Image 1 (cartoon, rainbow, N blue to C red):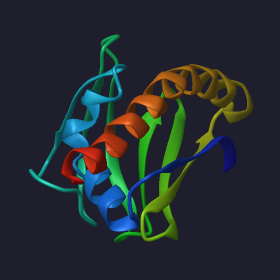
Image 2: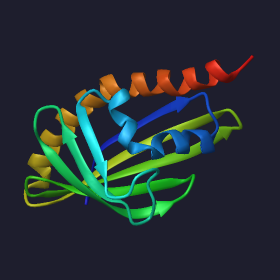
Image 3: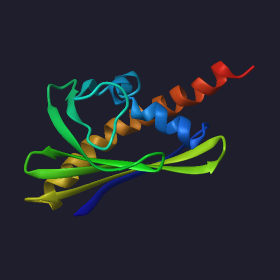
Image 4: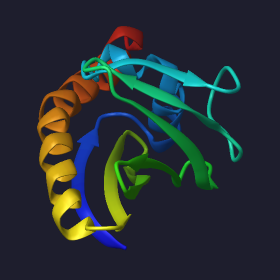
Amino acid sequence: MITLLRREFTVEVGREKAWNHLARVEEWPSWASHIKRIEVATTGEIGPTSRGIIRLRNGVKSEFTMSEFNPYFNWKWKGAFLWLTIHYDHLFEAINDNQTRLVWVVEGEGFSVSFLGKLFAFIYNRNLNKAIPRLVDEMNASVRTVSP
């Protein structure tokens, strides 16, 4: 397995709040405009046996299954892209009570991962360049709206 992409960013909310926000994966299209819809086999927050389908705006769909689940620390799911298996790790690192570093690591394995993985990472990175600032704004705004 090779690392295709790693992104780190900080949000102005505690780790539990950051986890709870991202665990509602069906709401991701609010900040990830490349995603049309996410269908999770069970409604509500994700869990250790979660699986579902991510439908992108370009018509591509990708099934995912949870492969690792450590509440408030990380979850990892995997899905297919052409002849590859892509692993998406979502890590939550508490900086202090009101700040969390999110680390997203994307790894790939399979036929021609050195070529197809680079292509996937290029496309996915462009989507993240737009999505991450929206997510940060959305999470940080959630704190401002509840503060006096």
